[in-house]
Figure 1 (cartoon, rainbow, N blue to C red):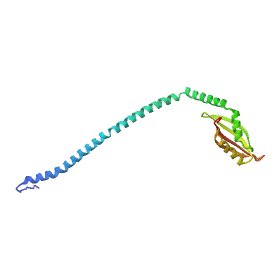
Figure 2: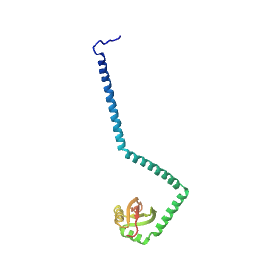
Figure 3: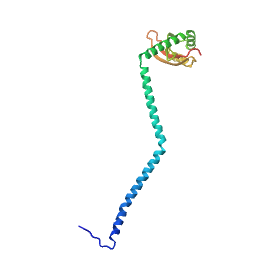
Length: 185
């Protein structure tokens, strides 16, 4: 069906329809341009942050490569043998440096009269001398007094009880404890 417009100005309506059609397109184009401008402004404003992030990523990859190279070097058998020898010699050196007279004097000061020491065994752990002490006490209170005296001493630290049991024959409390020895004060 054909529609014929017999009005005095038939073309004016088409122009009005054209304006009604182009207005939303122009608004949409302006909003798009505004979004592009805002994105560009923020992109340039944050470009230094993006550069820092990329430099950090490259630094991380460089450090990762260096770590892998160091790990390959440390994994060699010669290094492991060297560390074992070093630890052994360090252990021997610290044991030879142990002054038994000062150690026994310090233990004698901390030892209550009702506690008897049966075994003292030194060992070296990370450049520190650790003592394993076994002994007997008449009561639990005597054992705790000995541990408390060790804690209060200037040459001992970190005393803790590893084992304790009551002897069936004489009803004494047998114990084993570990303490760090710092040497002479």
